[in-house]
Image (cartoon, rainbow, N blue to C red; front, side, top):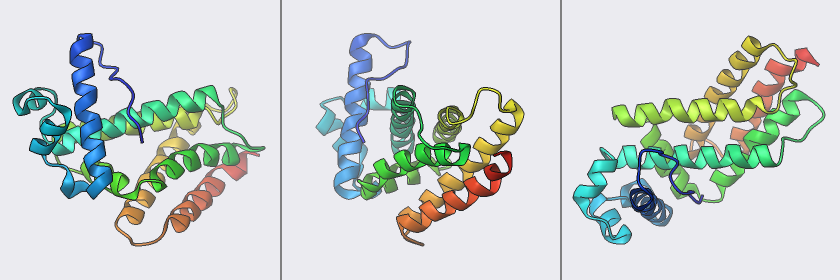
Length: 198
């Protein structure tokens, strides 16, 4: 997963670049050794940013990794907008979005484990990131629906599928089952929820 430049509008260009370096350093460490490999001192060294400065941007390791996932899902949303979901039914198009997201995570399991562990943290800043990830994923999945689909029903469906996606990924990173079973869970849920509208 690569992280684009920060979209936080209150930062100067220099601050945004520094913040992006910190996020990328954390992601690099996580990719190399998983959640436990991300230590704030090591992030500081790798990003060439003072430790105190990092804590001005991020309250904890969990906050830092959760923010990285927020940036990643925003990037996913931009890519899905640029290349709309494919499929003959709403379920197939929603599954196309979720498969793209899951495929990207599958390519780097240690990194995925790290960001998902952080996202499930009790850190209040990580909890805010969890809500933001949910909102961005919901907006991204909504691109798979026709314009005339009932908005309230669509929102309920994408929120529910977001929960299934997140819990499936947690099961995968905790090695309860393989990535193919996580995909099966998503496929079953999408068809159960959406086939009735075809």
